Image (cartoon, rainbow, N blue to C red; front, side, top):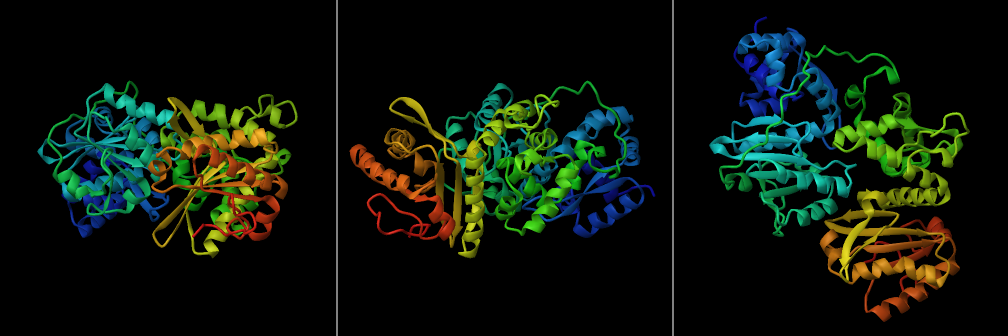
Length: 550
């Protein structure tokens, strides 16, 4: 079979945008659905392209197509190029294929955004980036240029801020569309971009991946408004320049791949294809909450414990998750798991391993927290009783919220829950054990969680409360979350909780600051549930209330 017509065009499209699915090919090529589906079937049967299965939230499972060796040679012949020239002109070399497959989950969201753009401005020319701050770039009719930048789930504040700063070093596109992991980090990025030299629009990635060009989900940095993509692109001023990467020193023809071999025999870049969406969701939760138990993981996922075990077993088999007996069978990511997420989100693997590796510094000694190489993982394992208490609370809250009709739309571990702000000309921070957002009927209830085991003396209690007094004395809580979040504090016993309530009331009155504080203790929370009538506020000691407050 010799490709012709639509098939010829799709060979070129798949060279510029590897791993498109068929619906995305319809959008970016301009051909009808029937023509594209027929052409893909012919190319696949002729051995010119092959599918790779892919599943990742929030998108439906699909098949993503790439050019085979035969397809690359056929396209090179049609373009009048040698195969070596072809793999340097398009992102189809073995190095590019490995990089794009490692970023396959991010690739899917970026392609959906490119498809939404193409419904407004057709045709679009697409460009991937490997080492520059932008993830991708689009050239639209009329000389308009659009950059796409994605913040991954594991990206920390410092690394992402540096990436935004690096945008200034090279040519700037006319507009930058930014895909953010959640609403809190979207608001943080808006503040960073308030004086940016290029117009930027921000949206939560999960919403942008499902939205069309007419949905109002995009926020400008300096104006509190919601815009749709059509409005933004129709008013984009021609100009700007997409940056160009240096030509790679190494570019080799890729070999056709097959999914075989157990566990560790699978190359790392094939794992995003082999893992199911639910398994990836479990991997992200284990990444957020190292040393989580299987029971707690089941609660956080909202599934039964046998189902959680089914999801974990492949992760352990692929060498992505460790389950050491010495840690009570609790779960944490291996270095291979950290690498998978770091490459997906374009973050530093070296930094991730330094913080979160659970590998032994000395493999010859017994597994112990003193021997864990990652400093954060070592600290969590050292204080395992506190770590387990936080995990159990959040797992129980997730289950109870579901029963009460609330959706847990966000649940952040300490690395993402911290808030930094300026108070009295100094940078300060609150560093809770978790941050979450519950939603119901359009209403949002954000909260911080502090699980206290050591704050039993008045001086220590004052130290724990002081950052929140500073935080809530400013406008930052509303700026960060849209509404003022509650602060939940849980003590090990009722006596400490009562002392803290009295001290908190005195401190808030003395400082003239009202903190939306709710206090409880372990026994009450375990008996009534995290959202049950287990909570007291300063000044309301005798009347426990349920959460969220009405």
